[in-house]
Length: 194
Image (cartoon, helix red, strand yellow):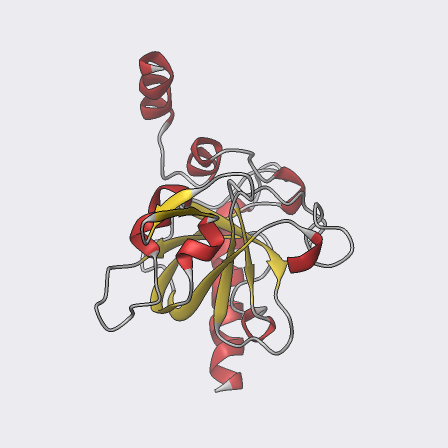
């Protein structure tokens, strides 16, 4: 299994390198055809000392802890999902997964950049950084989005690109543009609407 993971990681890395060869250092890979997918557990966290290390505003990769775009991955996924990997979260309401509040926080998810790492005891899991100061309605009361998300099992994530850690966009729109999910014409149309 480790050998297969290494082969997959090498293949993914090769695709990223080929897609950016000869281009500027801040260029990102386009959305990948046949993008690798993973089935993982998913939780949420906030950039607060109780849920991070001594500096909650800096991720393990050195990036700013931006709840708009950052996610962490368990250390067993570091070869398959290195820092800078952009993922799309594909989840569905599953009645067999009653502790998952995906539908309650879905508007806060979007694309995510793997820029943080989880405690070594965690396995096959991603942890989505969510805003600590916002609340969502869940189970008849207002709660933190990370609490509302709970533990979601069997979540599909799909690799859609890669960005340099020092160049992580600050917004979902910027991240979508960076990986080619949102074309510039669509971006201009969105700007006109606002």
